[in-house]
Length: 159
Image (cartoon, rainbow, N blue to C red; front, side, top):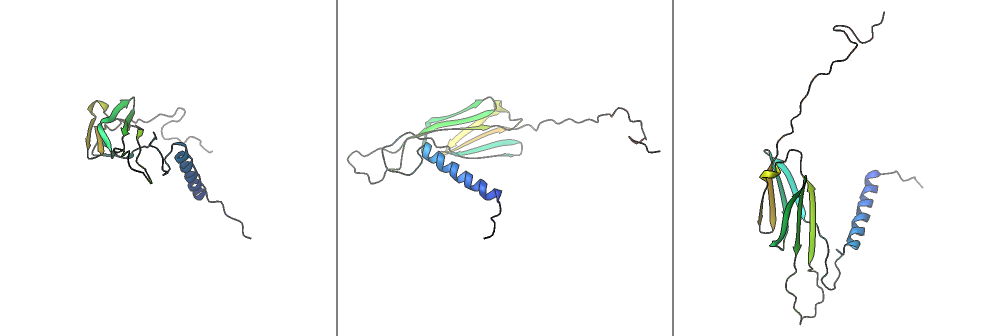
């Protein structure tokens, strides 16, 4: 029998799958029938910087405008809200009911230089868009003189 070579990428992938399964079991995100309960579900988010502007797009299908909150907490952008399931028909004998009420909160650290005073948010067709200008951090540089060296001489002279 040949020895199995250690593959760190495979091990990380296995760990990620196991952690995903653990969180699914803990927060009730398995697809089982039953009464509607509260569960946490983070929205899908894309963020990028283009032409000096930070852009964040969050997919929030089924979230009503009055159940959505966007706020700044220090250097963090926090998106929270609540999804409500469609009306429940009491007379029906559900074979499977996967729509549930869920609340969520997503916290993201803003990039250095984000001008939070000029943040702007829009919510259209289930997509939240947040934008704000980002100033490039000013990096200054200077030469540091080294003591003990004279101009034109090497640090250690060999005689």
